[in-house]
Image (cartoon, rainbow, N blue to C red; front, side, top):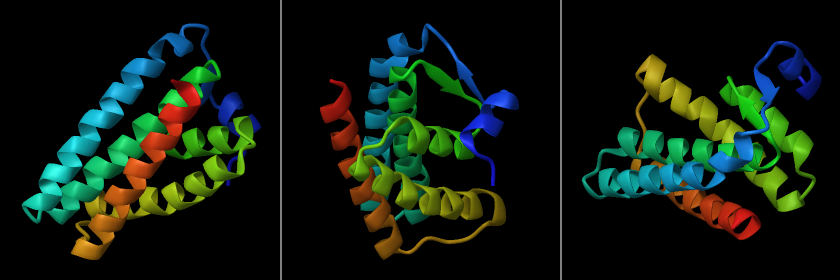
Amino acid sequence: MKDFKECLEEGLIKRNKEAPKRVSKSIEIAERFFESAKRNFEIEEYEMSVMGAYNSLFHSSRALLFHKGYVERSHFCLLVAIRTLYKDKSIREFIDTMDKIRISRHQIQYSGEFANKEEAEFVLEFSEEFLKLVKRILL
């Protein structure tokens, strides 16, 4: 398992003075993916709903990273960075669950796994709560 220092050394997380300017755009993207995930859930496209909700989580997390002046080149290192840069317990708990969702999304996208209604519903609700938390923190 990589730590924050290794992610920096490998260039998977980088300092970027322009990153804070990208916060609001990343939140907008997170909102769009969330809305898409909701629409896919409504038509019982559960795999697409999970993938859309995960993308919302990813862009919400990127907004947190951008706020701290960093950019990422790895989904895993993004989560490592958030754990390191934010000490807030609620964020850390979200990131721990998001890591599990990251693995599930990977299985759906690359291994052809299926998602059921309950999983899709959980990920959708979770992504909505995380987006709300990120907005409270950053906006």
